[in-house]
Length: 235
Image (cartoon, rainbow, N blue to C red):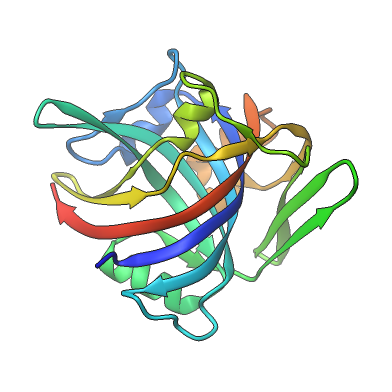
């Protein structure tokens, strides 16, 4: 049985080019940084969890909720084959029980914060906004997109960002947890405009102050899908 089943919906992704040296201290044992056409990316991602079940059980008041995370991309060679995965710097959710479970079982880096979201639709656009409060100040990531999602092209930057099916967590210098994530190939809505009002240094630490005021190389809005998160293994 999968550890978690849910839907991830309306994923807003802002993708920044970053110096690999900044990420190196966070790279889990056995993995190496993954790049797309020579660029190392870190992504700010906001989305909505829906219809969440943990070990098949719907936990009251923990079924639908927001998440915002900062992540980067790695790969791990397993029996001669590369697995492409993500590493989370921090994952922010509004429910303390989620933080407790994720940090205890998966040793992830969850924090509980007050959060809200808005999905709005007009005749010409979709508006998707994720907000969270840190240090008494609201942080915000908003995207305006077209209404019709399109297939992600093979070999594209969008494919690199969205097609990762493993998670890796640095536990200590020579120990990593690996877990699988399953979902079908996603579609993306063409983005028309966006606004990011985030104090990266405050929310994610001084190492990521470089992102404050930096223009992302791309911003995407993926429709998402049902997903599963599988049990962890030690590397």
